[in-house]
Length: 260
Image (tube, rainbow, N blue to C red; front, side, top):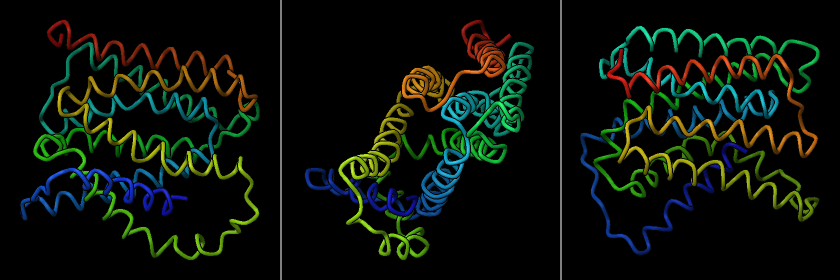
């Protein structure tokens, strides 16, 4: 699925080339673009798909909201941001809430959620934070469609040797319309479109601001999962989510009040 989704994303990324003028990429940027492809295209996709297969929709979506805090940590380490008392408290609460969600996945009451699945979701969020901080200059330099075309083409080439055999051996003739629709959604929607919008947003807002909108995800995940009978909201998960959200709110609000 990872290989197939990256191949589809690579094909989709070439469509804008029909009406766009060719944009030349400086030779000095190819090294960092390859790293971006390995990080955002391959590593993040592998971790996310592995994590989603071994965690519940609600737990996974709550852990995903850790991204703003991870962006802050990476920004501080990179020297592009600073810590304050409020941000330290926010980081502590946010990390505590996220780690509590991860650890409670071992509880028998949390069916469909495993420790390693949640750990992979945290790692996926960390990779996203690294990309948002270290590759913002690259995003601002080139057209989004040009950058994604190169990133996804490199990612697809890297993953193709690992996924071509399972793809060719798949029993496509046994798939009904519902499976084809589900496969099409997984191959198209979670890969190319979100990264197109994410990279576009990074041209106009700071990484921390862009990452705030991950908070829409758990709200939708809870509503859809409960409505479809895929998951149920546990009291402890709700408590940990409140702790995590409070931590991120402290971090975000510190920017509005001068970083104190």
